[in-house]
Image 1 (tube, rainbow, N blue to C red):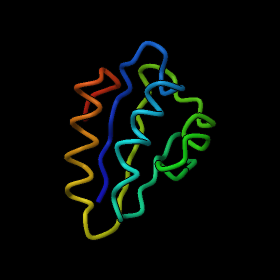
Image 2: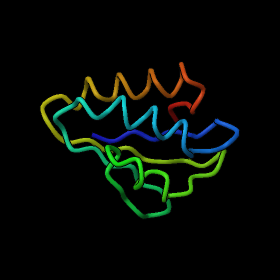
Image 3: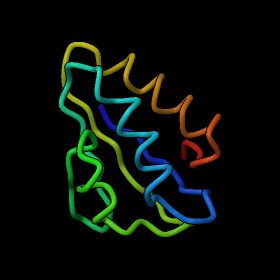
Image 4: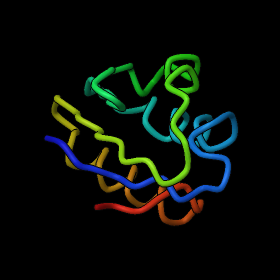
Amino acid sequence: MKKMYKITAPEGLHARPAAILVTAVTPFECDVQLTYKEKSVNLKSIMGVMAQGVAPGSIVEISADGPDAEKLFQTVTEVFVSKGIGEEC
């Protein structure tokens, strides 16, 4: 399962928004990846996400594989919108 999101946070996907996303996905069993500029990292890794250097206005792809992937995407989309991190494309 994959979804695309546009980053709308003025600071991009740096410390605060990255921490919020990592915290939101960590409880899920499935494997979840964030892909930006053809490089994928584990979305459960704060250092991996921050190392991507995702700028405001960028499009990222989040992919998940596992038994609770659908619930994970509901949570991710909710967090993106409610915390002002981004929007689903």
